[in-house]
Image (cartoon, rainbow, N blue to C red; front, side):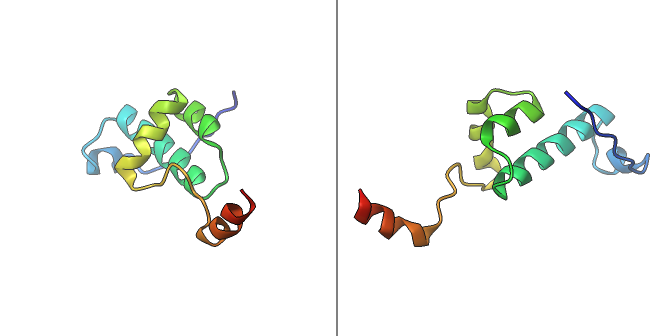
Length: 83
């Protein structure tokens, strides 16, 4: 697996009342959740990015009000008609 280095102010974890490790985990989760929400990353790869299984990742979506299924509402009537 490749790695990514992000520069951030030394005081940032303290400002958020987190350890360096907690802050790094939060950044990984933020990246995985946002890429999943934008439809740029499937749930399995997003889960791999944060080091959890797919089901655990999908369960975490609720905490951030991110739908597990992102189905465009305008496609539903057509799909139902074709079913």
